[in-house]
Image (cartoon, rainbow, N blue to C red; front, side, top):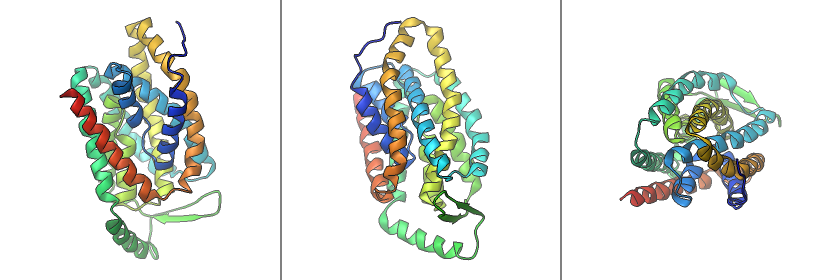
Length: 285
């Protein structure tokens, strides 16, 4: 194994990506995978596995911050994990059977879809209408209540649980196969559809993603070890810079969430997803 400084610039990039991901609840792999595939020209399978490993450390760092803030709904998270983990394993297994070109196409189409859904659901007029309706509803009735470390009380109801389970299955399979989908779909369901308070939804989503990514990452690293030293050496030369970066960003992100309006963050990210997905499909053409 030979470690080099070739990818030193990934350290500041990783800090920025993890900060954005942690503050919004979006999976960091959705940024790292295109960076590795398009920017560095890595094989999609190596790029996806490395992105998942990097995301694991970034989300674990952010998870500790949200855990201390007492913002995680563990009951909801465990119910989603029962679906997401088995499907992530299936996605990892079947992802090996998909040709690299098809993986890139699936990735591009997938993040365009997610970006479009986020953009539509976070239009200002729609958000205001849904917030007003749910605020009135939760004045008298709600299924869940959570009090954070600052004493803030959150009352909410997770609507359409079957949709949540479906998104956990699809997101888990996509996460195992192309490294993205679970965090983004959970965010769409909890925040946009059910109007769960953003901080609770983000924290719970990160809890679900950390456990699911851990399972998927083990599978990918097993495959790297099977392929030999050259692949593993390439992966290690990337993560020696990306992992410290996402650990730092994972601590900054939750603090940033208190400052930047969620609407602006979501709309900006949704547009970025659409642009990145379109560019990836363009490179295939």
